[in-house]
Image 1 (cartoon, one colour):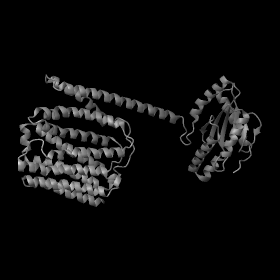
Image 2 (cartoon, one colour; image 1 turned 30 degrees about the horizontal axis):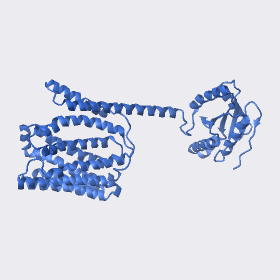
Image 3 (tube, rainbow, N blue to C red; image 1 turned 135 degrees about the vertical axis):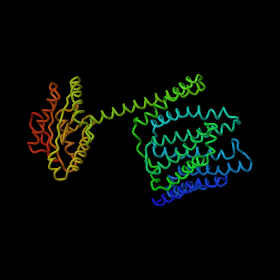
Image 4 (cartoon, helix red, strand yellow; image 1 turned 180 degrees about the vertical axis):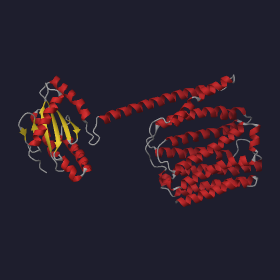
Length: 491
């Protein structure tokens, strides 16, 4: 939908929600207005989803089903109260109200899986840690009083406990969505705002219910009661706004995973969650009676295991990054070949191995001919491409045991184990013929004398290279001897 379209929808919804405060104090008027706004939200979701590609519609259908079921529960609840005086739990409306949670949870799961196809175990552990801490508080102050302390049957207790459990489920998945990767355009935040509004509305009723007589007095205040209802109305239409926004088409697109790191806010949340169980234990000890010991022990055990898993993940990530940094430090960024540092580490080891086995070793220094002229004629990007293509071509022409490294600029070095002067020249001849883009190189090759150092060996090969250049380039010259001329390769 165009920007004007979804903005018009949002404006109509805002007016309808604002006028809710003026609706007559009649059950059917109130429920009818709530239904109108709620179904306006459902219509917005379905209309927006219809304009998306078929594959991207599924999460929105889940959201529409959950909101539609929840809204449908409103008139059912009013009818049961006025027609049958049914005010106890469970009522026929409760299954409809509760369908909001699994439906929205399913939509969130689909979004998370599509936005991060490879999964994100680090985020999952973080969210499990936070949810465990919040879940302990919910059990002690909401679920347990409902499940144990009220004079209703077991089905009523189960239904009443299902609401905070559903809120915990949505909180966990919403946190996981926020912790993950993917696009964060306007529809992402409309969905986040909608689910957040549901949680805020439920929390408001929980707090009022925990205040006893004071809560009952507050609930009788018309504007306050309706203000909380308006929070749910806002939640209904925010889904519709998100679905109709032009950015909804990008919501399910896969994105890069977020970096594995602990920001300040994330660290604060994890710390607070980890301290929930010992903090609650301290409060109950101060009050002189530990009433939730089993729950505290369970939470502490779960937290301990989650923290251990998180530490293992961090250590492994650090190890992977350290290995990657070490690898990058030994590779040339342009060609992907070993760099001078890797060469300086490898050559002494190869000479030591050859000394112990009495085997020959040859070293060659290669230099692309007229590379500066090529750069000036075609530009530096073309020069970089030539270096990469030449490195790949030479690597393919060499033996598997040979080591090709970039020494600097257009200069390369080759380590040729078990190669005497003739075999070394044959290998380098193949590389010379494989040089791409009609280019050539000059090379100096030196055979190790079993006594000189690595630096001395490189020095002899480098001197031979300059002899090859002086002799006209496009040739391979043996160190401390007559140049071994190679005719220009056939093209």
